[in-house]
Length: 185
Image 1: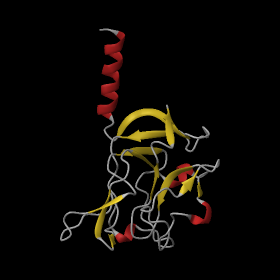
Image 2: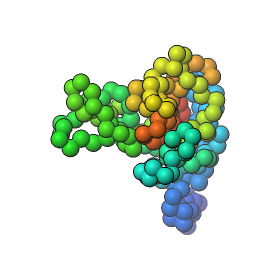
Image 3: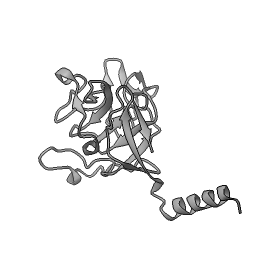
Image 4: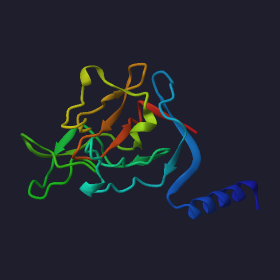
């Protein structure tokens, strides 16, 4: 057996023996503008975990749901996230505005995200150096930012790089923009 075939076979065994992990290697996410590390080393999950809809799982003080992604991990969200938004065709049975999000109705009716795909989901505490944009731009919400207004977190260099969703009625997650950040494995 060739070295390449042996390596591929070992990788397949590793993936199949640990189905929740897609890539056992460690990845750090960096700012595309300045190269600053935004996260520590993280392990990729094969898919975005389901979010608990149980209201008893929410934090009693902040009313936030548990984070979609547990610390030390990340997942690629294949669904559209954030603006722009399009009016949904079916206004009688609308879908959430974005994956794991609430229904959103604007003047024109229920909307759905037509934003970017493949955002990188991380636990918000795994990117603790990120700061809110000036004047808390795009951070409207009841108990925290809803995450449906666009980028609302910046690298220490000032470049907007992520969207935090942390309101009491939606998911608790951080989406790294796949263009404004990059992975280093």
